[in-house]
Amino acid sequence: MGSELIQITLANRPGAPRPAAGSPGEAANFAPWHLVDGRIATNEACGAGPSPGPANAHQPPETLATSGALKTFYIETFGCQMNVHDSEKVQGVLLARGMIPVEDHAQADLVLYNTCSIREKAAQKVFSRLGTFRKGRSGTRKAIAVLGCVAQQEGERFFERAPQVSLVCGSASYARLGQLLDQLEAGERRVTGLALDTDECFETEMTRRDNPFRAYLTIIEGCDQHCSFCVVPMTRGPQRSRASDKILDEARRVVDQGYTEIQLLGQIVNAWHDPSPARLSFAELLSRVGEVPGIRRLRFTTSHPRYFTPDIVQAIDANPILCDQVHLPVQSGSTAVLARMLRGYTREEYLEKIQGIRRARRAISLSTDIIVGFCGETEEDFEQTLSLIREVEYDQVFSFKYSARPNTLAEGSRDNVAEEEKGRRLTELQELQRQIQVRRNQALLGESFEVLVEGYQARLGQAVGRSTTNRVINFPGSPEDVGRYLTVKVTSAGPNSLVGVRA
Ligand code: 5AD
Image (cartoon, rainbow, N blue to C red):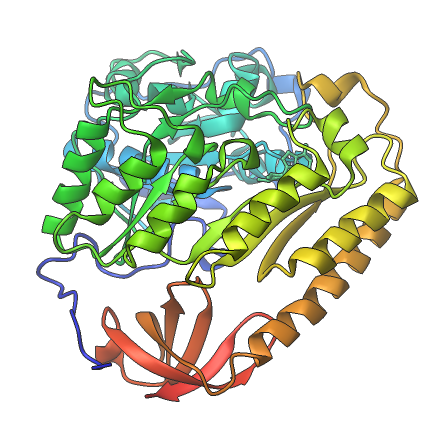
C-alpha cells in the first residue's frame, strides 16, 4: 500500500487544529477576573464552591443592557459526541452573529457550558464551573448560558440554583439560540429554550467543525427506549429521524469541504427511520453515505443491540469505506438485570448479534458500555457480566458505576449496591478488560494497517494515527504527516494504544 493518499490542507480544512472545547487545558484556565465593558475587572465574590449560596436565589442577575454587548464567547463542552457536535452547531450560530471565540472564559462576554447529565458526577461539573461566577455585589457581569442535558433537565429551576445564569437552553432549541441572545441583548434577564420535540435541531445554517478530520452528522435525535437507568429520553426528547436526502446533502457538503471521514451520530443511531419517501433502511443509508465520492471512512455511533440487524454487517462487508468497528453497549451480562434495565434483549440474544458480527468477512472491532452495581445486581449477576466480557473479548469497554438519575424508571428502585462494592466491581471489570486488551493488541504485532494521522507530538517526534478499527497508533513522524493516510506496521502494543513504524 502506498503511503501518501490525501492530505487535508489548511485551505480546505474548515477549522485549524485546536484543542476541543472542554479539554483539560482549557478547563484549568480559570481566573478570578473577567471583562466588564471591555475592561478587566476582578470578581469579588468568585468562589470555587459547587453551587451559589441561597442568599442570591431569588435575585435576578444584572442585565446586559446595551445592544450588541455580546462580542466574544467561550464554550466548554461536557459529555458525549452528540454534545461535542451540538457545540459545533452552537459555535456556527455565534460566529454567524459576528461573535469571536476566545480561549479563556475570563475574556468572554458570553460563557456557554454545554452540559451532560448522564451520571450524577457529570451533571455536577457545571455547578462547580458556575461557582467561579458567583455574583458580585455590584457591577455588570458577563452573560452565562447553560446548554444541553442539565439545562433541559433543570429548566427554569436552573435560575433558582444558579442566579448568575441568564440563558438556559436544551439541545432541541439551538435553532432559536440567536433569538434568545437577541432577547438578552435587548435587556431581558432570563431567557429559556426548553421545547423538547422540535425537528429544527437538524438543519443548521452553519456549523463550526472543531475536529479537522472527522465530520459529525446527526441523523437521529432523542430516544424512545426508556431504559430504566437512562435520562436521555428526558433530556433529549422523543426520537426524531432526519430525512435521508438531507443527510446525503450534508455528507456531500462536508466531503466538498475536505473531510474524508464522517461519523453518523444518534443516541440510538441504528433505530433511524427514513421519514422521507425514499424510506431507506439504516443499512441502506450507510451504503449510500459510503458511496459519496471522496469519502474514505464512515463510522456510526451509538447502536442499540435491539436494532442491530444482519443487514448492517452485510453493508460493512460490502463496502470497505464503512469502518470495521461497532460500538454495541450491552450494559450487563445478566438477563435478569437486562430485564430490569428494560433493554429489550437477553444475554443470549445479545451474544447472537455478536456472533453475527464475528462472522463478517472482515474482522470487526467491538466495543461496549457496561454499568456495574445497577439496582439489585447480585454477585452472580456481576459474574455473568465478567463472563460475557471474557466470551466477547471486546477491544474497548467503557464502564460506569450506576448512578440514579432524575425521572428515570429506576429512580424509585432501591439503589442498593453499596458505593464501595460498585467501586470494587468496577476495578475488577476494568482489570479483566485491561488484560484482554493487552492480549488482543499484542496479537497485532507485525501487522500493517492504514491510519489517518490526527496529531503530532513535537516533544516525542511522534505522529498519532487512528486505524479504521479505531485503534490509536504512535509512530515516528513529522508535523507534515497530520491529515495524511499512511500505512504503519505495529512494533509494540500496550493496553490502550500501539506503537509502530511507517511501513
Ligand atoms: N448510571 C451509570 N451509567 C449510565 N449510563 C447511562 N445512564 C447511566 C446511569 N444512570 C452509561 C451507559 C450508557 C453510557 C453512555 O453511559 O453505559 O451506554
